Amino acid sequence: MSSGKHDYFATVLWQRNNEEKYTDNRYSRAHQWRFDGGVVVAASSSPKVVPLPYSVEANVDPEEAFVASLSSCHMLFFLSYAAQRGFVVDRYEDRAIGTMGKDAQGRMVMLKVALRPRIGFSGAKLPAASDIAALHHRSHEDCFIANSVKTEVVVEQPE
Image (cartoon, rainbow, N blue to C red; front, side, top):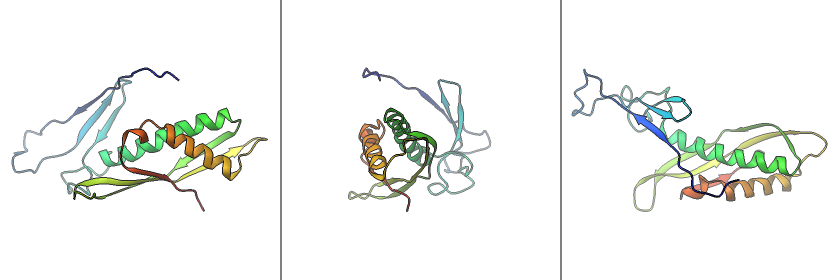
């Protein structure tokens, strides 16, 4: 893995609809995220933050993307480290949850992100619970996104 500096690009595009006054705060928060590989994601504010119809419930909101980004980063490290240890991962599903609330200064922040991965393994070499815990610990320690935020990020093992 390269240890050099990297730049990442995203274009966020919002445009006012002509029939919207805008200054009355009644305008669509729908917008697009465009990435350098060509993917366009329909985005919006969260309906939990800006009520419908000014948000688009079907679109991805920044809070969901934040949770997904942490989960995805953790998973990619986990898959790499599991492969290095000789464990065959067949499936990795994480139904991560981000919890918003007020911090000590009264600002709304993402207080906690709980990663809740369910992982299926196969092959002759299956990991013990301690192996899985070690893989999660290392993945969390090395995840670029987790290292970039102050939100508490925890991995919750399925029961």
